Length: 210
Length: 400
Image (cartoon, rainbow over all chains, first blue to last red; front, side, top):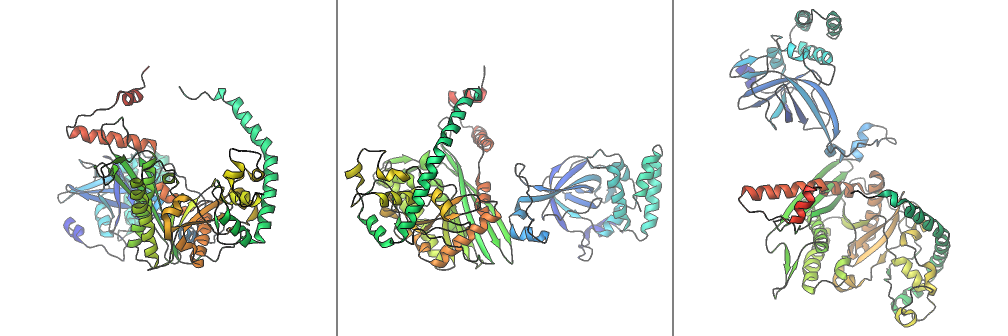
């Protein structure tokens, strides 16, 4: 499928993908942080998201999700001792949804410039306040046709276990392909080439592809 | 040089010892005060008459209900809204080159029940125009708005924003509008301000907006109240002083002029109203309603005459003030009472809406610094010559 065709497709409600979920609040060349519009509505770990500006689109993999107080000095306290369900806490304290925020951090794994996919870092970081969208299955499938972006994940220095992110990303991407197992086998071979000098790590990562 | 705490330790130990030594005496006073209060309840009319006939130097409240009342709160509505406003300000700094001040109003609108929702908003406004930074009389006299007067101005803005916000509310649910602090602008009553200032701030300001709230009450179920945490007021204790006084009619100036101790009424001296009601009320109960007989209320407030009651919470006794039009509606008093208990329960002892309004409004030290830096930066960018005082520069540099 042509990139333009993919980009012009309207989001499918059935998939729940392709929707606007947040906004970039911190940006660097290799990663960015986005704030969710709705509490606890971050995309899953390892999922593919994108942001766009005049220069094109930047694709990234979600590697960390955090929900915390909007103000650094205010701690969240436990409130539900006498309640039966967690939802009751938010119903009884409606201000909580305005005082808490969910952020997710994204590892940049590629970009689109013109009509071409590039599975390496873009020349310019994401723009602050640019919108962040989930990717539709077709888009995920198209982006992961080649696995060149994997090295950006495997070699990333991030504050969460990087192999967990790589595993989550590949499991997530496999579901966009018509034959998930074939995709995972292909990914495993790619990893084997990359991690041939670190068999223990390779084995550990491959176990995460099941 | 920071404060040398080692030089203070001995004095703090003395302070603790002094407080401890007074505890027994205080307990005796409190027992006597409660006994007196209960005995007064037997003949309320006689007490009312004594109040009317007396001339006291103490501020004594008017009686609306029996003095020993302990009223349990009605059921809180399932669906209701609490709207609170609070403010903070950055005062005029005469060491800065720009003459201006800032008021930041925080609003918390919390909806409970079937469709829970919250709106947390803030409205910062910079005052710098000639007509904004001073109050001018018809004959051209000017009173700059700064210091204490700015604090009063801020309170008025809190009330104005509350009224503005309620006008925009299209949800038809019972509504409790909360302000922080007293409805009585005591500082204006101190008679240090000329009449045109009092009129501008009180009559054409605070009372006008309270009047708007009363007007809004005719369209929807709305109660307005102000909340005072850990109150230091003594009006009900003063009522006991009056009841104890052996002179008839009571006339402080005539019988006790120049005496500050050893008077018969000093057997309850030093107690606060909250001490009384902490013992008299069960948790969750409110006291009787009283009306304020302060001179500023009598002279200016009219239909917004300030009434008040105390409510015993889990951690403290708070004072709640309501305008007359709320006090005269039993259901609105009940709504205020139950909503405040509910708010304190949700807010770990303090009304959560007021707490969130405060969080929206608060301007801390770092904010102030950044504000003045931004003002100076923009003035410089606009080519305006800055004239900062040497004192201001000295504090900033802190050289040795």
